[in-house]
Amino acid sequence: MTEPLLEVHDLVKHFPVKSGLLIDREVDAVRAVDGVDLAVGAGETVGLVGESGCGKSTLCRTALRLIEPTSGSIRFEGRELAGLRTRELRPLRPRMQMIFQDPYASLNPRKRIGQIVGAPLRLHGIASGSTLRREVQELLDRVGLSPEHYNRFPHEFSGGQRQRIGIARALATKPKLIFADEPVSALDVSIQAQIINLLADLQSEFGLSYVFVAHDIGIVRHVSERIAVMHEGKIVEEGATDQICEWPSHPYTKELIAAVPIPDPRETRERRGGAAA
Amino acid sequence: MSGANLLELRDLEVSFNTEDGVVTAVDGVTIDLPPGEVLAIVGESGSGKSVTGLSLMGLTRGPNATISGTARFEGSELIAASEEELRRIRGDRISMIFQDPMSSLDPVYRVADQIVEQIRAHRDVGAAEARARAIELLDAVGIPDAAGRADSYPHEFSGGMRQRAMIAMALSLEPSLLIADEPTTALDVTIQAQIIALLRQLNRERDLSIVLITHDIGVVAEIADRIAVMYAGRVVEQGSLDEVFYDPQHPYTWGLLGSVTRIDRPRPKRLPQIPGMPPSLLDPPAGCHLRPRCPHAFGRCSEVPALAARLPESPGHLDRCWLTVEQKRSLREVDGRIELRARERTA
Image (cartoon, rainbow over all chains, first blue to last red; front, top):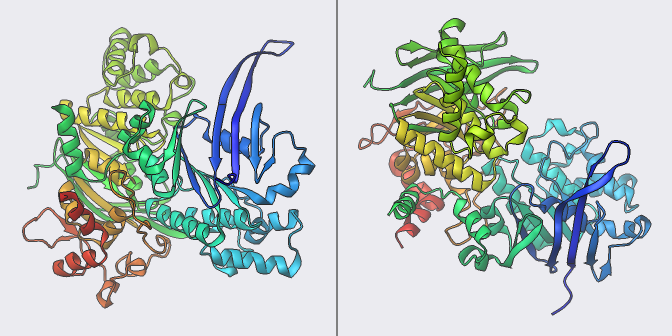
């Protein structure tokens, strides 16, 4: 088997809890990510599922080195990221991008769409001037927005459209890997489907890999080839999607699956009847 | 039928003057709720479902709001009621819980004190008695060690416990109607399941009628007796749970049912999606509001269809669509999802 695109090994991120009046002493640590192994192959989608506070987002941010890991290894395209200096990381940054949950908070309200989507291209010196404008307009078109949106501001867009802007920004540097952190949970159901289908199209078009983070295992199941279930900073179960959803072995995974409401009243009554008997 | 219902909402219309113009958030909503039932109002953001709930409580009144219509509830008329009258009804006969249990509890008061305050605002009972009642309620909604936790502050509670505390407060005066506005949206799935089970239990054991406002059709299937589907300020379909799930008449309902992922079914290649996006309520399309997004729209859709019973066999099943019943049943089959799912079920 070839080496995976991203391989995280024994990754740990502890946030210190400090106490003391004059001298801060570290009294404890929040074990947000507590020894996680995770591999993502090229073109693959790995779903990361767990409840709020389980460490999903911290894992993404640490793997991207947006925050410093306490210990552990992050190999991306065969290179060790842990321990790299900021300057050394910079050329790798365009290869890994992130899409955020809240499309209202993740776009600068004072910048025009063109500036927002073009920022990564400008910062990494990939394009400038009229090339940049053309590339941004192509990106907008690709994510289902109109090139005329170039000069608009984020507040002129709906939640779903904003998420498309965030996706265009993540795509700008032609990454290989995108961490999508709850990309649809702030959106309405009918819009969720549009964004999920868009992500799937982009994946086959550009050969992207995704780490798809969500608290809803129903959505994760739909998009992922493999699922990792996270609980209290640890991956408690990992495997092929159908394996995890049909034969979950960890009690927490079972609980997550059982909690997903089934939009089918007859089935719900049957399940309830069965539980009562 | 009149008089048999706990709540009869007729032609509710709520509009707000905004800087950009008049927004008609609720455009003629008519809903009946028989006593002891759970009615789910389902819709996306901006469909008017929350404004409908808030208007029942008189919470949308203000200098910029224009509200018309009637809401009969236990012999009172809520829309025209005076503030004084509403104050007696609110919290006492109708209570409400909200999406975000953190911002609906006062962070500087202890949980039990907030419940005590509500009880004593409406009833002439002593502090000790009210406190005992508060603890009893916290216990009834499943707060472990209720007596010990009663003096906690809201920040010491988890999200699920806060929502339980909100429910305890809502129940404190034994209302006959609870309006629950997205009560589980801010919660994790496992906690959501617990809260839904609790609401269901309260509905069954205390005969509490519930108006559940939600965007989640899965939650609806778990608890509702009746559904009203709202789109862009209007109820587009209304009926019993089974009528709406298994014989949906409005194309928007088809889209809503179709775009839900199901964990107990094989994964479709692509998620069915509703094209486009909801209209701006500043300038909604003429006629049926779904028209620009509806693949089945035809000439007549430029007129607003009435919310009417179109199925002779189910007089309680109403919809707002000009297509004939035969057209609907065949179109949603070609459209695939709903009928397809229903057929798979039997296997």
